[in-house]
Amino acid sequence: METKREFTISLALVDLLPVLFFGAAMAVLGLRLGSFLFTAGAVICVLAGLGKVIWKIMIAAWGKDIRLLGAQLRFVMPVGFLLMIAGAFSADRRTAAELLHKAVRMPSVMFFVLAACGIAGMILCAKKFDRYDVRGNWIEQVLNSAAQGCVLAGILLL
Image (cartoon, rainbow, N blue to C red; front, side, top):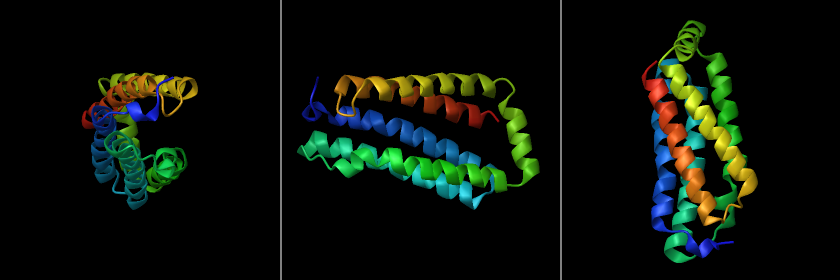
């Protein structure tokens, strides 16, 4: 198995793509929903993703493994998602219903299905690879970038 010392700056920068895609998608959705809770949850999720990117940059650039930065994602991200769910349920019902109605129609639904497939692939990667496995990280980040790009495309088409 490869070691954490084999993380590269290019891997860390690829890890930034899904964070940017997700952040842009959630900013658009948060503005449309007009929900503070949703937006706060999205910000927490983006910050958790940035923490993971910083962890990889620190390993690649300085050989420093701050374990908390690498592990926090699995604890912080669920808090953000819970706030986003609460925000979606507390948003204006008419706006939320309209967005949901558009989300299950073409072309948006096609992008959301593709995103779900990418996320399923990431779940398999999480079970198969350890967080220090460089090859596994590359596979996971390509899947994550594609999935989050599809989420962004689906939301922009709402």
